[in-house]
Structures are given as C-alpha cells and as structure tokens.
View 1 (spheres, rainbow, N blue to C red):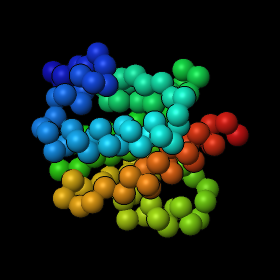
View 2 (cartoon, one colour):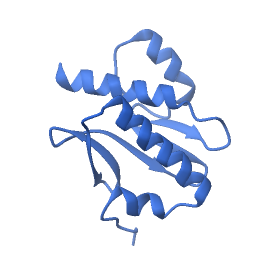
View 3 (tube, rainbow, N blue to C red):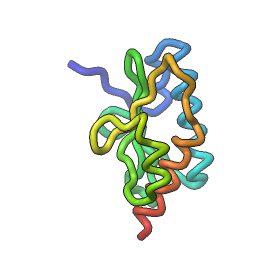
Length: 117
C-alpha cells in the first residue's frame, strides 16, 4: 500500500536530503509566485490552493521532480517548458540537472491566471 501523508511537511520529510532540498525549493518558489496560497495533500502529493481550490501539485520521484498541471496559451512560455514536458499535463525536472525554479514559478503564475479567467 502506498504511504499516506497528513501534511506537506510529512511528505517532504519522506525524501532523502538532496531531493527534499529541491522539493523545499519548489515549495518556496510556488509560494513566492502565489503568496496567499494555502497548501494541502491531494492525490498524496503537495498541492497549493487558492480559495480552497487546487491550483498546482508537485511531487518527488527517485530521479526527478514533477509539477502538475501545465497551463495553456502563451507560445513563448510553451517553448520554455517544452524540454520538461512529459505528457500533456506534466513537467518533469531531472534531479541530475539544475532545477529551473523561475520556470516553476511561472507555471504557478499562469495557472492562477487561468483559474481566475
């Protein structure tokens, strides 16, 4: 049976130090992009919320971290995101490469705009 988590802190604590540091960086980046966001565990992964509604999820894996879903629209942003796209709604960032935190922040910003529109 899959492990269950009561909080984002519990989720992050389940990872090795190096992965946890990256996930902590993603968490900070997302909160910087969406300052009033709440957070919860949804689908057993960390989720940022706005007005109680899920906006963006992130997760850690053995060799990468992922952010879900991906916003639509902006062509320049889509081009920046293309190397990390893994399926229609997932961005996958290998742990063996520098993590583009600025791009992850932009994902959150665009998702908030999409949800508001």
